[in-house]
Length: 452
Ligand SMILES: Cc1cc2nc3c(=O)[nH]c(=O)nc-3n(C[C@H](O)[C@H](O)[C@H](O)COP(=O)(O)OP(=O)(O)OC[C@H]3O[C@@H](n4cnc5c(N)ncnc54)[C@H](O)[C@@H]3O)c2cc1C
Image 1 (cartoon, rainbow, N blue to C red):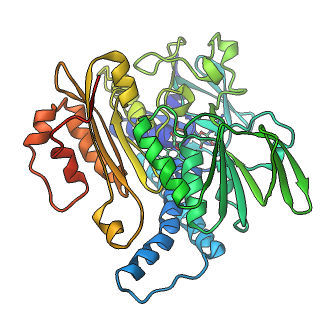
Image 2 (cartoon, protein in one colour):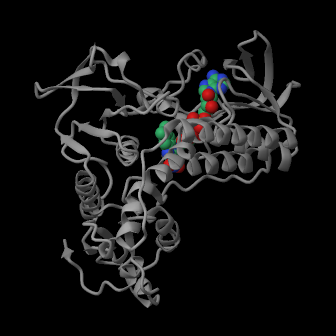
């Protein structure tokens, strides 16, 4: 049977764009892609990129305080959100255009509309047009969900935070995951009065507990009102703002409430159930290691599969799909030891197992150094950093590396190479220190602080 396309990609985000470009420009396939919102997807339009620019914007206040302590005659005024927002919008337009140009140069045909699946080889576009493809790649990502509490529609999510007309004076952030914590730090840095509720015992669940405890301490020191074991029970609009009643019975009014309480795969109404595809938890598309679904012509990559929801993972999954299907080289992305960063202030850089995870599976040695770093200590700032290695007692292999410090994301990218290569503690130790740095601790910690 002749198809209109070799590949039809649904979703112009990190995974979809990479797969479409490679299949077309490197494998010579006839490719089309449908995007219902803006090209670039979550990462470019309402995720990593605008968020990181906000992280940069928010870090200048503390920098100027430190600069003054170092002898600079410097004063910082208020943050001007409209100025930043204007520049941010232009930057996102520029990036979206770059994505569109890349696809055009690669010869990918783009449909600026929603697409759904009619059958194993047929795609229906919102305009009513129907097209066929030998392979269909679903890369529709995810979307933020709000809890089912009275008044929830008064709150915003990370989707809306980038489009605020003005910055609120006070905000309640509900949630304890990386998005909640990052925005608590960002808004605090921009001068907003931040309260954060998290229903659990410690923020950033699943990450190394020593690291997350240090981050929560630092966030509190910086003025964030962090309330653990608490949650929003109801929201009500009043003349003074949004009145929030919490699960402990307290009430407080905020200018803005942001729910960062989780994301769910974007599979609603895609037509998958009619194909006999049973969806997994929260609507995720179950796939095998080659990102293939139970319907052989349909594949899925990125957040919609809810494996590891990060941009570089979606990109690698998309590239592996193209290798497998269009180059005939079966390739699967290795989801083990993926390094990642949480852009709180200070940042968390992490790769491999947390101490808790490793200790549950084998005997370990923990090497950890928490200290006041030279730069902020000189400025008189009371902040700490953490360098930590979790090591297998039996093999001496470094199972996990966790860094809490400014620029920890940059550091973990490099430490991640060693950990991924299976480096042992002795190999870390054999690497000469770079002095004076914070990261030199990673190669100079001689004695374990704990063994299990
Ligand atoms: C606030 C925030 C911050 C983040 N920060 C980071 C970070 O610092 N580092 C990191 O690695 N990751 C980060 N992420 C996660 C990262 O953005 C995602 O993992 C990544 O974008 C997933 O890519 P994807 O291709 O799976 O989906 P997406 O990038 O979400 O793209 C999916 C696209 O599909 C489109 N679409 C959906 N349904 C249809 C349809 N039926 N028809 C046509 N188009 C459709 C959507 O409009 C969207 O453009 C962040 C996410 C958020 C929300």
